[in-house]
Amino acid sequence: MNKTIWILILSIHASTTLAENITDKLIATLINKKLPTVLYEHKDKPWDMGVYSLSVNKVGGASFASTDKQVILTLPLELIVSGKIDQNLLGAKINIYCKSRVTTDGKFNIVPKLKTKGSNAKVSILVPVPESHLNCDGLMIPIKPLLEKHISNNKSKWENDIEADIYALFQQVGL
Image (cartoon, rainbow, N blue to C red):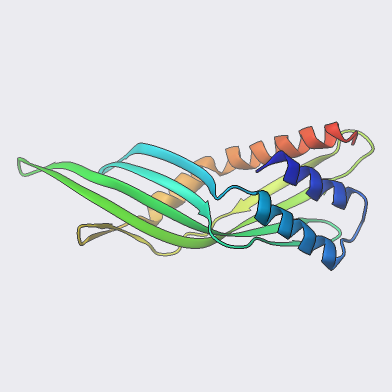
């Protein structure tokens, strides 16, 4: 996520124990304006059937809420999966183009631990995957397990990256 957004989010919350509703609306507006549309992307990753590409896009307005202990950001997401089946079946080479669009809401829970020095935050990401299929010229292949595995394999890295960004921002503002 853009470091400017995190600075604004955490600076506002560093100065108050309970955010006002208008503050949450302001932060959501800033996130909606500054967060890029494409949040994650990879191309031609191998899988059991061939290769696939994945793009995770922000597709609507973020909602932002806070309590005296945590910050919660919810983003409507669209996962675009494309790829091809590249298999040999009974001696015949099969090459089929596939595509799917899946929508879900990603949730980022951030628990800041504010101190006069050495402040940090614990981040938890939840991206539920609904039942979904890859359409390969009419052949429907379930991809929920593939997407869940990808999220599971990357979730810790994404959380650690956001936590490191927040820590760096806290250091920049002297917390």
